[in-house]
Image 1 (spheres, rainbow, N blue to C red):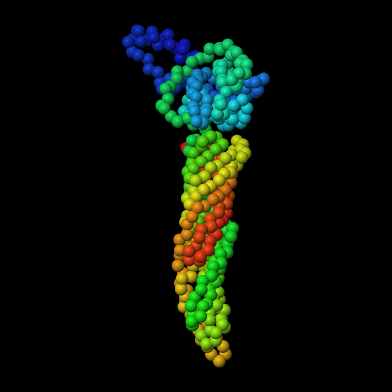
Image 2: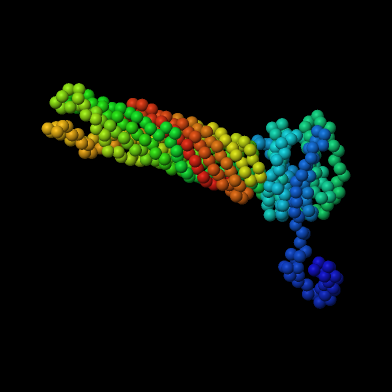
Length: 392
């Protein structure tokens, strides 16, 4: 098609000169004359002596721009005129001050390559070669390889981009995570005693509160301090039933020191717990699609914990003996609060550039003082959650 247009160009000029009528070229023909788009094919590297040589292979014409970013230290290369990426989204290096190399389609016609650097970043040189770009890194004081001669390539007119935050495909600066799952109590049983006065004697009520399996929901928000370090804050809501097992020792109305032992009917009391926390997660191992991390949690938790407040009873003495029956039970929910500590283990599986499936296991310790029971009620547990994380 292009050859046909070039062949017809002189004839079009003659028509314009002769008739004064301009030749109209269709939008389809104009699109056919546009500069072909290029492709970022692959990124490879090799270590030669004390240098790390990185080869970025690009198929087709391009121009490039460089940008150095601090905190964390990164070297950013923007390849203009490159509209397709078939290279791997991340290349792990871990040498000569380079932790990883990441790629992403920054704009429709701009491919971005980001080098994650160590705190003491290496020096570097850039050389444009026939099939792409060669980047050489070395630590200060090491011998420098002289750059190869640059062969001019067809120039693609650059488009001035708007100011943006530096980001790479598959890794953004912030993230939000939601999840839900099960809460497994670590210390399910709490036992407390209360004295009561009855028939001018002292009786005893023993309450055994059993914390059952419940559910948990979680929302967390954070930021990446580096590719392997995340910090943030979140909130967890838990709900479970507490089963009461209460036993009373009631004095005899006629005989001293002859108490009757009575078992109260069991009841289930709903309990809720809310934990606000801050966290840090550190990558233990990762691949192209998987990442496992762990870290500490510190929070402030508040829970509603029910105890027996009052009860009704009938006490009948007949010729056959004494019968005590519990006719009514009234429970109150006391609020307990305090600091919570935890350990968080997280596994992520990439579903897309910015979306991951997350499986979390979080062990937390929460042992507040229960004023109604006069003892510490251990509400520690293990949360097992499944959810999603979105990076932005």
